[in-house]
Length: 160
Image (cartoon, rainbow, N blue to C red; front, top):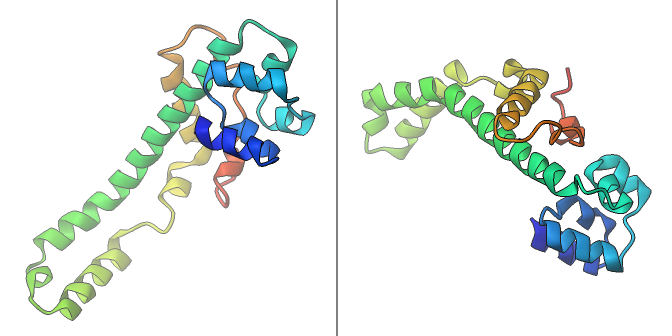
């Protein structure tokens, strides 16, 4: 992610600030380039950077752990949603038919019956975010999650 952020900034795209997660790279970049206020509004931890606040490194670890937990939990929601489908296809003798057309029909039939349209919506976005925060907090010092961005915009169509 950090390499992408550096490339974006080098090309003049301020969104690169949203991708810098390495403390050293972030602080070196800030010595050469000012972070725009509109980017800080999106990613509050950058306010610590511009203020020279010593809590920056802990807050970065908080962001990283939160994103890791959010990804892990999001993937788990999808895995749980797809499991009944996979089992049904595996158990259906028709899915082993040599004709590709038959195999396809079997998969579509089970998908229409068993796969939820939007597993994350069914799980609940606020619930997912709360779980990610709680999981991340287990591995971090108190206050490390105080500067998390509002990530709901990353889940288009899921706002509750």
